[in-house]
Image (tube, rainbow, N blue to C red):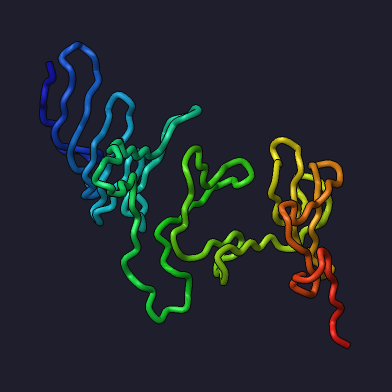
Length: 239
């Protein structure tokens, strides 16, 4: 069975506690401390599993920061541990409705302020060389409207990639953008902009130069022209 008891308030905690009637020392405490914080405390692990501050901020496994409404720490080491797991198990049935595992909304407009826009989601991977801010294992990533900026906080087009000045070459770390059979060391297209003022396109297999094929299924190629007349047309600039 489970026993329930009361504990007198101290400098640390006070309130009610419950424990299994099996001779163990496992106890859970629920109450309020001298800092006017509501808490759920695991006596066996000597850890505060849930704490609500006097300002209404919630911390799970930690004391919440003053600027954060919900603060969660993972607290466990090892592969596969999650600080937050959201599962939507509702089947997509005949009602044709879209079901969301999580929805984050910013309802206020920044108005006339000229600073950074309000952000519905902010990801920060500390130690960025070893951590990943986002990893998508299955499914699609869809941006229904708006723009995507990589290295660009104010993208002016649908996809803007600002990689800064990059060196040309053939390996995995050159250029500003690579697309192709990268994992399989197959053909890839490397693109970027160099510090000396030119842009470059390079075909590579990761180590060696690789052919670049254009219009394999038909069509023309034009430089300075739309290429509508010749298979390969070059038009010099007007004098």
